[in-house]
Amino acid sequence: MTQPTERTDTDARPSGGFLAEIKDAVTIRAAVLVLGVLALQLAFITSYIGAFHHPKPSEIPLAVAAPAEPVAAQAAQRLGALPGKPLDPRAVADEATALKRIRNREVDGALIIEPARPNDRLLVASGAGASLSQALEQIVGLAEKSQGRGLTVVDVAPADRGDSRGLSSFYLVVGWCVGGYLCAAILAISAGARPANVHRAVIRLGALLLYAIAAGLLGAVIAGPVLGALPGSIAALWGLGTLVVFAVGALTLALQGLAGVVGIGLAILLVVVFGNPSAGGAYPYPLLPPFWRAIGPALPPGAGTFAARSIAYFRGNGAAGPMLVLSAWAVAGSAVTLACAMARRGRPGAAVGSGLPDDAPSVPRFAGGGPEPR
Image (cartoon, rainbow, N blue to C red; front, side, top):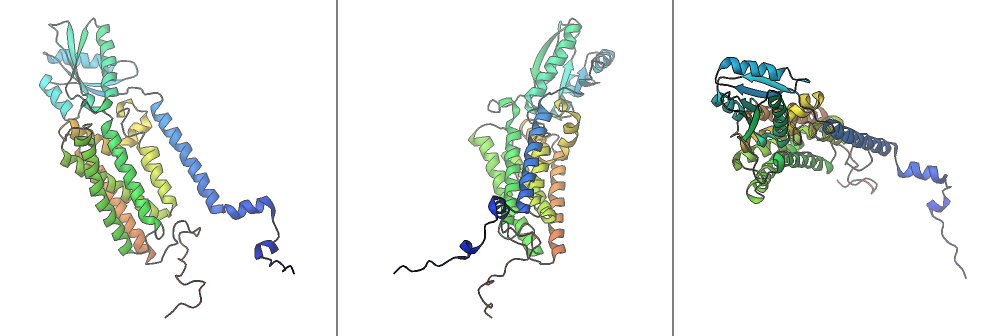
């Protein structure tokens, strides 16, 4: 005898069609987040192509020295009047002063005029970026040729043989930045994007600091002794790496505290979409469009890249300003993270991926299973 088949709730429920299935599978919140990802992706494409598709030299700092001061001043005036203002020349007392300014990162090159010889000399520093030194060579070379003069190029701070086009500093800092915001994002996944109380916020910041110390050291060792891509003090690079990772991580935790899961996207927007193209990696600041040149030094990737090159090729000269910028991001990010935790006063947040809003209370441990045992 055939037994009747038991009907399930699914079989009894009338079908709402394919549209109903889509609404059931993709919530409005998920759709909004996907649209946000699309906007972030398009911003990424726009920022990189916009910053790099047409590099144009603009007011590159250049020292000019000559045996007689009037000769140097006249040459500086002539170079400053070039169409498009590609150079920002300033006369200096002598070659020693010009060289000192290059090594202090006050100028990017120096023209040494030698009237008794057919060729003048151009001092460049490819450690600050090969594209920048090449641009200087081209611009000054054409200007010298128009005066019937030749040009001899001398690289006074050359990029290391293992540092292709002086980009290792940039890639190292990008790696540190990626680690910073990914670590902060992972710390938020277990129990909501917003820290539920001050204790949790302090723990997250402490864990981030430990991660930053390890990541800074390992990155410096890999770039230096392991790959031979970057010279300079390992201890100094370690300190810089720790600061970069912690600054970016603290920034990400702060944005998570303010905006929940969306804060991770905001951190990527700030650090990757705006920070990386303006960091002066492939094209140093004088070759970037005005907008990117203006924001680069104030963002962690730009500050980190400039400081890394200073440590590697200029004995740390010029690194103080960028280190202060990174410290400001670290302090501000930590302060906002703690302030957001204090404002929540211990209210638990929904776990990331639960489908609940970030402000929704967590599901009790024994929910749905009868009264909670005492």
